Image 1 (cartoon, rainbow, N blue to C red):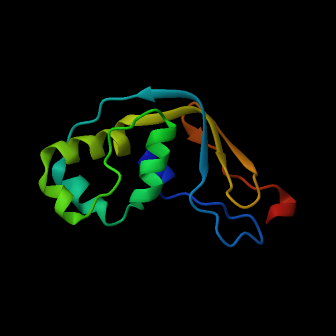
Image 2: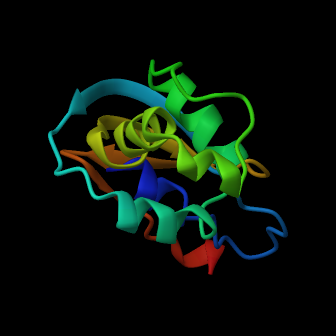
Image 3: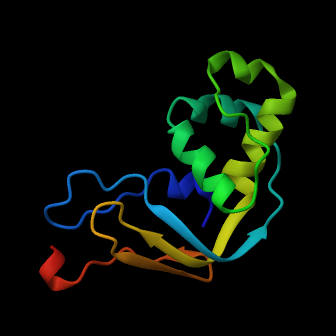
Length: 122
């Protein structure tokens, strides 16, 4: 699961008012090469919760993103490459996503998050 995907997921358990961002518990991280596309990154930047991306990337062992970023950061090729790596090349292969309110764990197996709810959570 890419951090791009993680940045768009939240817990939909009944009664949860703030299910974002899901906390990551890492068992296995892999890096997969993806073609660098600066235009895609510039378009995605405004849709990304940067603070959640920063925290998730650090949990996954990548500490190269700056603490703060704004649209002017997109002028830097160095920033775009770091953003690209965190957003698209880091993959949570095995682990869990944890609801910040309830602590409910959603497993990630072979890079696929299982966000299905139990009957009593709907």
